[in-house]
Length: 132
Image 1 (tube, rainbow, N blue to C red):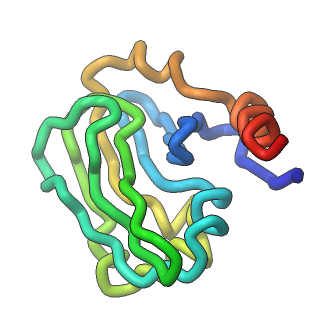
Image 2: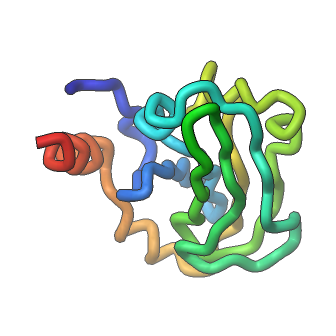
């Protein structure tokens, strides 16, 4: 199984990605997660802009015809922005999970946490191990 996971992103074993730009992490869910869920019908945020979150805290949930899945923050920090349009257009995640379908932007409180995230290559290896 080979997919094209953007190499400029960092990944978690829970299938979130983070694009790190300076002290800001843009967070989303991976193509693997989107394909596993199927047609996404609802995005529900459980945090608010300005709220401090810790790594592995639930940011919200994604609901599809198959399942409901939590979205975890891969980093600790302050929520700068939520992608509110996803609440009206959850299918954006199915169409473009790496750009238009981002979930949240978080200002990093501990940039060192980024080192704990997986590279695209490590994430793909992890997926292959899980499928074996």
